[in-house]
Each structure stands twice: as C-alpha cells, then as structure tokens.
Length: 104
Image (cartoon, rainbow, N blue to C red; front, side, top):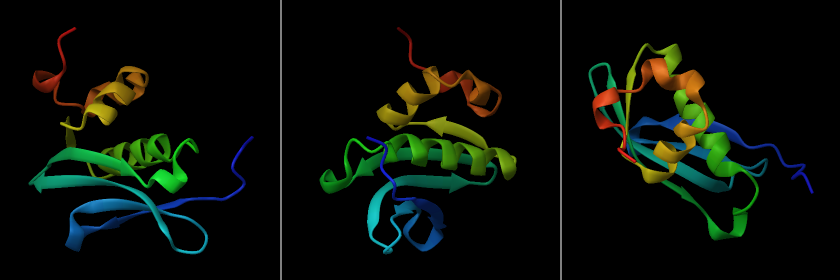
C-alpha cells in the first residue's frame, strides 16, 4: 500500500509556506508559517483531498521541523496537526517553544 510517488518539500517564502509536490509538480499539501527573526510559527497544515492518506502531512511535518533545526530556529506549533505530530516525535522537543505546548 505504500505510495510509490516521491514528494519533494520546498520552501516558498513569497507565499510563506512549505509545499509538498509530487513528481509532476502538483502541490499535494502545504504548511503555512510566520517568520519573525529566529522564531517560526507553523500556522496551518493542509493536504489536498486527492492526496489524503499517503503520509504527506507527516512528510511535511518532518521537513519543516528539519528545516527549522538546520536554520537554528525556534518553532511555535500553532497548527493543531503539527502540535499533535510533535507529541509523537520528541526528538524535536529541543527546538519547540515550550510556553505554547498544549495542556492535556
């Protein structure tokens, strides 16, 4: 059941979002952000309904978190999807702004 299509994730700073595209260049999903100095707030994750169920949300989440780490940024996970994804990926805890963590 693995989707053989590879998705590339790239930053589109003019749109303030990271985009996941399939091999044909079709946008399958995106994560929007607001950047202020060394702090990046990920505000929304959206996957096109035609691409749902293929792990694109997780691919985007990992890509944006890896990008933030590589650039030395602190992440504010406003997006509920990303905030939930981060609860399953504690390896990124060191770059997440703790004051914004959800209280359970």
